[in-house]
Length: 139
Length: 103
Image (tube, rainbow over all chains, first blue to last red; front, side):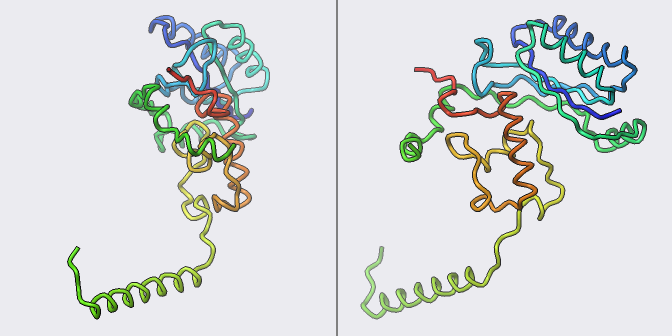
């Protein structure tokens, strides 16, 4: 068993119930493959650095779990087939994991706490923050 | 600014030079600054944190080399992978031309 972290971006215009459906479906896969879900948290609605599927914003979700490789395959397959998912990334956090010890550690450190939403930055501000001189200099 | 006498001006100039000389000497005597991740062990390099990665990226979104950022080899490697992961998740741009410009 390895510890994995999966981050996925959901379409911003989905309703809460639809998002809940997506989340429970993916969390259900971990249970089915007898993995252990440490936490599932929302990273909030964020501006994307570039457009994905013509969207400029997205809702980020982060899963932390211990499971076998087959479980990851199944999760990634589901994320790929779901049209409401803009992007996902799975990362190995630890090669060997002591499930109960890790769960206790997470609780102690408060890693599972949801991230508070950031202040929205409009496109105009982003454009203003780029110094045009710098760009021409690097060219 | 108040116009001072010649002597006052000269004194001020000398004072300034002295101060500058001291700071320069101080700079020469210091060793190379330690990598910020080595200095502060609590800092974790996280690809989900755009603010943390920003000092290691140029205005155009390129990764700043180690000789400028001052990171040690190990932590520069970690920063590099973190930046590359963050780019995939659209947390930071690949290039600035990708920014959703509104004209």
